[in-house]
Image (tube, rainbow, N blue to C red; front, side, top):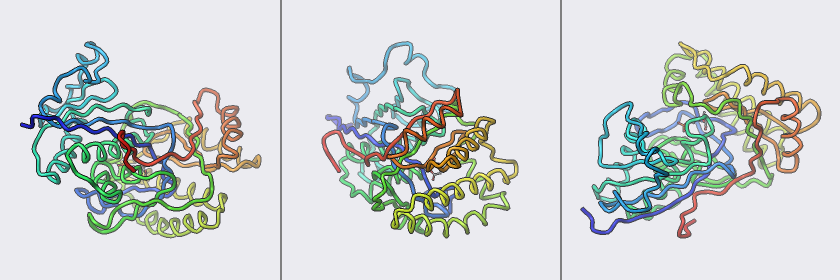
Length: 354
Ligand code: PMV
């Protein structure tokens, strides 16, 4: 056991893909079947403190709001597999969430040559598991704080590769602004890096439902890859989509970027819906939101839809039009929360890193 706990805190922001990641070539290493392109967003973030060592188990800074929260611990599923402690938004987790995080920390421990248990205290400004990319900000923050607390000093690329092992999309949240994840073919070659972008892009989130999703992206992906006859066609189109998107970014052509992004996302959902049984994340309000975005665009404003593993619709626009687009969407979709996000920063360590 260590006498001195080693501690680090990091903040990471969510990202929304314009060209999507859906499907793994290697399930263990999380190597994707295709490259993806995303925008890291401001406002939606996770801040995580990782503390190694025995004195991590008590003390005033335990992050639990009160006794009632601690008593409501999530003990529904599997018994704890390690001495690790996980507290998310003041609630202690001991089921599958702890297992997944402990497995990720095993990787970090192996890299650092230590076997000390950790305490992880995490706070989100994103509703947990709601299809608002909380796993991306969570694993990017955990990779940064966990590796630093373990005494590792990873390069940004090394951090991106590590975050990828927690949740694929997390490798993109290591960087700010527009980011490309190169699919690669093994652990070394699969990482994200920033893409220069002169456009001031913005994403508007239309919150259709913030409840927990029915099917994890992990299971949804596997079923789509294994059973959807449309999946190979979407992967084929995806290579072209990526080239067109990067070309549109270089030429600062928002309309072209919007068109290819919307087509790529809806094509992904077509492949999901064609899986057997269907991977259907849509709700009635999802369809209403997609039509509202089309109507706003027809009225002359730049607005294109994208969707992830949940019922919410996100809208690509630019910062100069974002407030007007958001207001037009609120007028058409009473009852849905509509929130503007501009581009956000990459991972930040509390004591100043990156
Ligand atoms: O990183 P995961 O396993 O949560 O997968 C994310 C998949 C999508 O959000 C649907 C698409 C993407 O590229 O972010």
